[in-house]
Image (cartoon, rainbow, N blue to C red; front, side, top):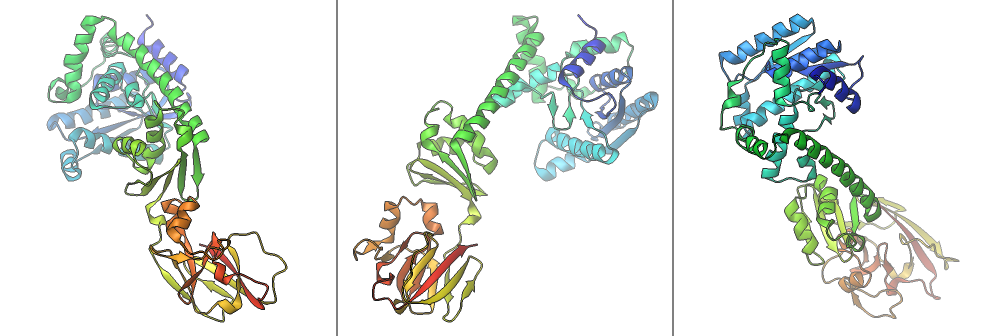
Length: 445
């Protein structure tokens, strides 16, 4: 068995946590784990500083911890940073646990120090047993494969150089090198969930397998490898199934159906950043066509063979705009319309759904630009003068509910003359009797 110093160097090299010339900020509580981490950094002649948080949770003992860590920094002749938090008050104000409050306060402060003093990364003294406890804690609460990996070796600017070592190995190193450290009495208190895992769950598994910690380390590594493949599949299948749109996503349900067992996980990974939760994902997969699901920022429509995602604020409220006579260009906050008045008949028609040609004698200003409404009817060009409800026209052309909400109607004297981007009304078309006509170009904003 290699000694702890050799394992430490090997672990750093294997995982490429930082380069020897880079500065590392060590988070040091004064307990055996973080103090041993300081000694290992000092032995390796790394460039480091020490940071200590006084959470004021243990009265005079917390202040004594801070003084101890300060003297440790003086011994190693490295920069020392310390701060004091009103942890209980912060937890009460934000309605979170004291442990969560301490964690949030600690990491925010450490990151500020890292940036201000130009440290490359922040090292914490989490060890293998901490990672095993995290596995059980997440497993009991419910988690995906990422939560079963234990504590990550590297997470952004946070590194954990002791994740290879057991608690016993760290204690043995401290004893062998006569290293003084501070004891935290809360480590023995049963009311902390992690301590119950540490003192009740782990010992039971060690009865079943005396080498349980090393077996667990191997299993955590296997889970990290599986998670890598999982993330690869999420990215690769997203490329095949998901299409980025101007205001969201479209997910092809027919392609997703090729992966029935993976569909819930795929959808969750693709939609979680839009605040959809696991319960919604299950409902989306079994919902009827036309169902809409909402989060605080987005809405998702199940539309035949597609899931269509967009921002909530992309739907413009029903509005009506009046376009007066005698203008060549009309500008609003939703669209720009340009008008060209011409004599005779067009030699050709532009193949552009947002350009329309209207017989001028049929048009009466002012025009109205509005959203479609239930009950709207028109006479679609090409339908031989037959009347049709817009709802039926939209259904026949397979417009989704979101698409319909975005449709604009151009109206003359109470009659629909153009479903913008889709169809001209038969009554306003250019005929052999047309003498003057309008060319109207629509550009959405």
